[in-house]
Length: 150
Image (cartoon, rainbow, N blue to C red; front, side):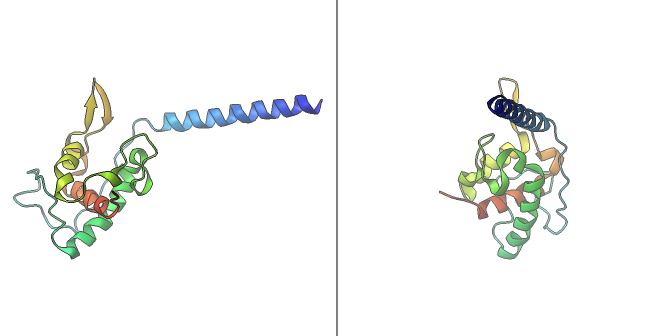
């Protein structure tokens, strides 16, 4: 009799674990972007609406520190659900610690951030540029540079 009870308990545990995983996967669906307060960052020249290809916050260490702090929060609220906490991916999306550091990775990053990634009609990454803005994107990029690994 105890063997039957053990099997029933095991089966129930597996069923509960499966239901929990399934509900977590469904919860990953559509998400609402979280606003990013970028008022502490200088405006982007020639204008905040003109998309540039090089991080404007990297040159000045004081600005970079502010941008990285804002970028860490923005990443946590908008990117971590796919790219992983601390930019350590669990396999759903690219691990952004390995993105080329500095200007070498800026153009690729801002292109993906601005336009997203779609292949064969499937959205792999939503476009974030119009929603969060260029200043938030460069703040996230500044923070990602602090997490870089070879």
